[in-house]
Length: 310
Image 1 (tube, rainbow, N blue to C red):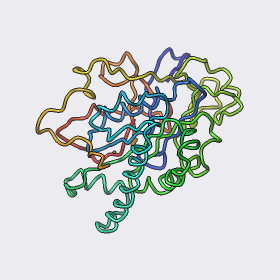
Image 2 (cartoon, helix red, strand yellow):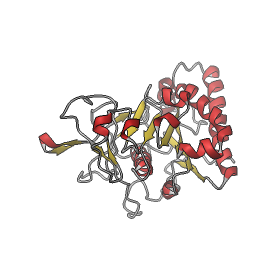
Image 3 (cartoon, one colour):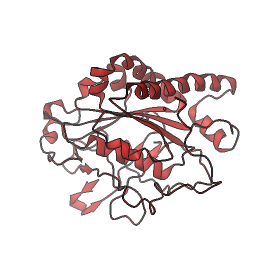
Image 4 (tube, one colour):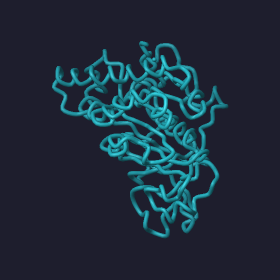
């Protein structure tokens, strides 16, 4: 988050633990949507164990998410040309929604916060899933090639957050999203739009966003009308230091399970600046909150009851 008048850059924090749990990212062609999506996933994976968050990804944006398939948090990555895997991934998440709804009834759980707290205390050792993210990088492909899945995404948008199931969707224009998905996506991140008039943030400020990928408009909440409102940037997380990064390092034997296998397939995220001494991914933007998370990279030997953070 750039603050030029203060000559500083701060992490930009989004809260995904409550009503802002669904994320929508909008931007024109080559604006950095896949880059931002990878950064959000990497930030969540860095600050949460594979028991706390899991991801099922539909990679319709050019293959950028395939680089994250090796994360222990990722249940699967399906590309556009593999319809069987696409339908299996969606069916897995829909099945989880139905099972968790019944689970809440059977165990008298009144909210996802209660589930997280009691699961962290060890009450549900047989439950492998925490907060689950259905990632769709390229909503236009869903409308063109997988239109039959739109009602399922609408259902996830309407009911998912009650049971810890989140959507993370990218689109080239806000109006392309279905009404249910758009209305329920309270966390909205806007990159450079193809037409500034399509901006839901500020059409005048949208015209000044640079054409370099990943450069974003001011956040949807906060000081968007202020001349001093900071812009924010996102950069792709590094995947080159496979033996050094806590995200990519191999899991040691006996340190706990990885993400549940696909049978057929935040919460806040802390996005630090590239100069930060902590081994976190580059900064991702958007904020429902400007407070900085103090959460450290996940410890494989323990879990927490807090919701997803990035």
